[in-house]
Amino acid sequence: MTQDMLYSICGLLLFGIGLYRLIAAPRILLKVLAVNIQGVGVFMLLVATAYPHSDPVPHAMVLTGIVVAVAATALALSLYCRIHELQAGSGTEP
Image (cartoon, rainbow, N blue to C red):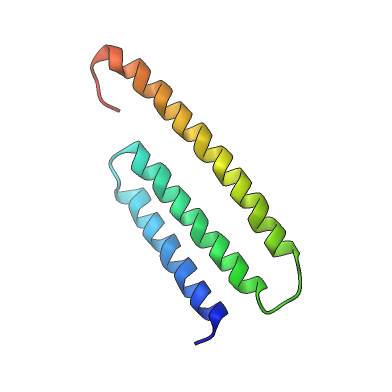
């Protein structure tokens, strides 16, 4: 088994685990974490497909994707905190 094949399999497994948790998780924080796990799986798959070639574009896409994923996670967590603050006064749990 080659290194790029191992990365591809791990990326697909991570994406599958994230997809399952996204569907099965009852809480919003677990869904945000599941989306991040899916993103890591996609990044690993992109790196694995770019490994045998000398094309730098997939690597640049992964770096850009990491920055976008961090920004989207920060936005999702700040929205969750705001929803939690608003629902704390009403006595309901998000």
